[in-house]
Image (spheres, rainbow, N blue to C red):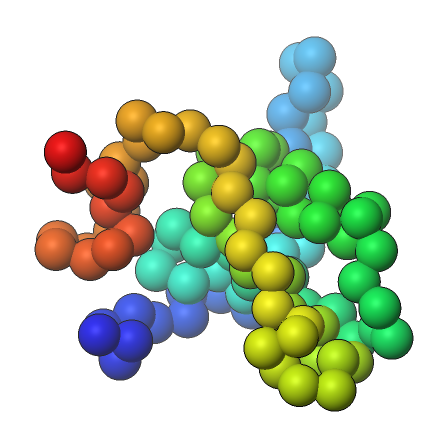
Length: 107
């Protein structure tokens, strides 16, 4: 049920460690839901491939598996919604609420 999930953070600074260098604010996640899903918000005429790659990079850097790119510039919201997955098939979130769809495949 959607009401079971809360928005954890808005415009949350995400630190990045690369090759033993620490960047306190590598990027800012627009919205993080239930500590598991990243929502990247745009308002552009047309979503470009770079926008999806940007979200995929955010997912990889934060070790999250699921994100949504929401473009408010589209005529209909369903036209501006894109699901982006980090691609792990055996991942199960320990932080997702018990019994939620965010826990991954349970088979």
